[in-house]
Length: 430
Image (tube, rainbow, N blue to C red; front, side):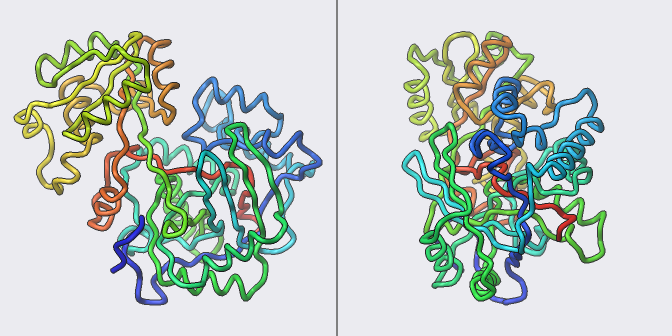
């Protein structure tokens, strides 16, 4: 068993591992858009709404958010709008398919990180098959929305981020050779990251990638809802065909480790004063008279000793830690490993949200926000409470996934995440 890096154990049966196949990528035609950077977007669940959505929509009339986050009054209208937009962009030559099937080498460089991986169409498998392992629970309404969007557009609009631990000179060697060639595209997004994409069309190189990946499992780093969506749509299309595959980016974390960040909660209807009053001695509460960076340092110090959270939304910061042990015993299920029972996300959802604050895990009550400052600003604007989280150690994520134990939804944010809009997959072309 391979215990290094960020992935599950290797697969020894050549027929049971990852099966990544080439596809004809849909890509923006540079001459038809203002710039490639202006049409890209973060993944759909990272876009801060409504501010970030409006910013991206105004960056270019063909920005990819018009497909991944179409705006209309009803869900059905939104999804049909995305399908119509996609068809129009194809007819107008804004998007065009590459001439032959390819695997795509993708590189991101910025913020002290160099990340390289391979984008392809991955044959789907269930968690029981032990090939692609989730580590978080999903929200049914999000899966339903993503499924309706994919079903209506017949397209995979953005790749999932999967990790594995590579060995030898197979896929990794193909990646390193490929990046020595001129790329298909190069762009720098407004966050300062530089992006490059190459097509791997040589059958021998594609075979080398496939041969190595057949020995490996992968862990879902980002995209649990889209993976669940892939599986739902495969059930709707049981005959062999394009619905048996999904668009993914595979990163060998032995070569290119990812960063793990927290995902924060915004409690839209709970003012900070009410949140603090409800704690009533069940947690220690301290006001932090410092700006956000120093408050986050205090949170990091507190989480080294146990569960801790930082509440914001009233113009200040409140460090909440040292939960009452008896309260945790009463509110957290006992049929899970200790590593799961002591997660900050477990304590937040099982103890604070369900028992202390009695807040349903519904979209109108809880928003999930990746950007720390945006979470604070939105809480202050709405009169709600931002619950700022500290990242989970990646070895905890890996070990729980190996045990088949999923963490509470939105427990982690691995990155950097691939830019959306650089390459799409149309199921009509496969």
